[in-house]
Length: 179
Image (tube, rainbow, N blue to C red):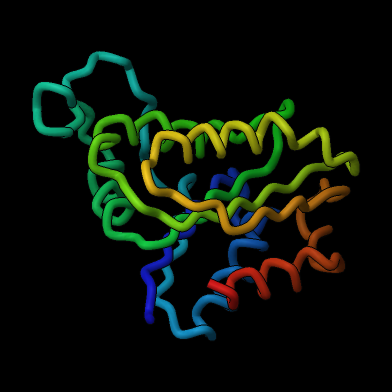
């Protein structure tokens, strides 16, 4: 069965380490016959949630008129969501967090997603990714019927391109192929 896969790349650097793993996941998922789109968040204008709850009295429509209005239908339509982020200060990037917070506008209708998580960090210790993973899992807790199907811990990569000579490249490709 062909699935619609949406990869949310939270890297601030196009071609950064986590973004590169997104490309590998995309390659594998496309080879498996799925419809795949990578959404590079930093290339779009997505503001932060102001907590005004305009959306709650306007059928999930946000008062902000930015690129989240085009992204939300993609999120709703996807069978599979991939959340990807470099780990900054032990958490996810501001770019991905802004998308998570803006998803509150439609939290009552986002349902039944297969979820994959991709993280990269300069440090080698797995525990340095605990908080970032908890943020992603926290978002998953807000999506009834969601299933976590894979996590990539891309450790020990800091400079752009360091991921290229790592086993994480194959891991991301294989994870995408397994969708």
